[in-house]
Image 1 (cartoon, one colour):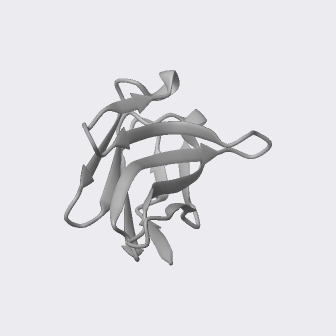
Image 2: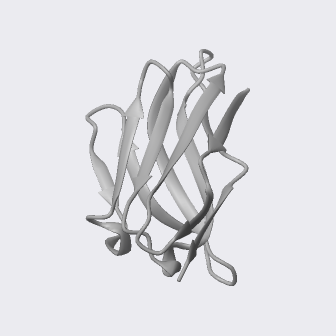
Length: 121
């Protein structure tokens, strides 16, 4: 089984910064993509940023481009989200998502438990 654990959420004033971390552990042969999603109250879960481990290609939601940066550490099977210039609209529960292959050559995709990010105005 594969698990992911997130950390780094909290309360920050508008204009502030936070760094989210996510580490994957368990039966992993290969990680293909790591991503951050978020869900605000009353809204659907949306993709914030993702990184493909094969070529480091990254994608960002338009609303966070230029403010957020996704990065990874292959050796630690970890992904990070540096969030700068935070605004109240960034307030949400942020979820880590990891997909890849197990040693038995089975695909997997797992979600973290979520970490709350609150930006005060």
